[in-house]
Image (cartoon, rainbow, N blue to C red; front, side, top):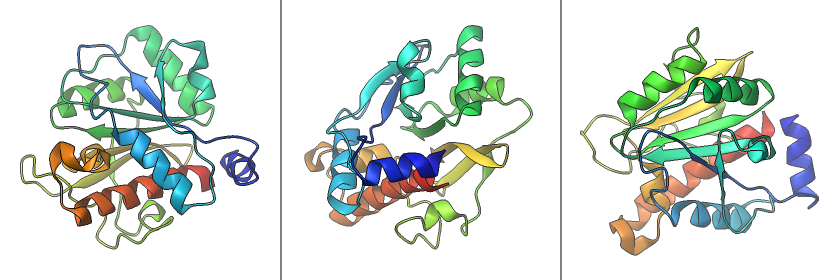
Amino acid sequence: MNVLIFLLLIIGQHDFTIGRLKYGGGGDWYANPSSLTNLLAAVNERTSIRAASREEVVEITDPRLFEHPYLYMTGHGNVHFTEDEVKVLRGFFAAGGFLHADDNYGMDSTFRREIAKIFPESPLVELPFDHPIYRSYYEFDRGLPKIHEHDGKAAQGLGIFYNDRLVVFYTYECDLGDGWEDPDVHNDPPEKREEAIQMGINIIMHYLTN
């Protein structure tokens, strides 16, 4: 199904967009407001994919959720999925959906707890550096780039697989979203912002082509 989506995007019949997940629990799901706009602009400029100018905010119980097979979530605080939301998300992933969760420093413990409700039998596992997500468009021989310091730990790209398909990619101790923001927000050096954009494009291209 993803290959078909990819072909439709190339020939211009659909615009690729990202669904920003509005989740419960009190965490700031709206963090890094300029990040996804800049990432989508880079997709337009650097690839053959025609992308929308900005993301669309979706809630888990919104009927439009399944119209946004590529979801992104971030934040610094608490994440909580209700029982009904857990059921919806199970169906979403089974139907071909994908989630990129990007810890903005503070949501790690609650994200891990909540995602385990959806996949109790499939814990997060670190992806090896030779995984295709690290070379789907740009080469990252050492895995996920480190954009922000946080606790000083190495950046980790963690995943959950469903029927041998990567359905959740969790970027931890990395903060790609900060690197996608407008340059004057975090004053990241240009090389860090470039690494963040390149990795963001890799995640999108991996989803579309696998």
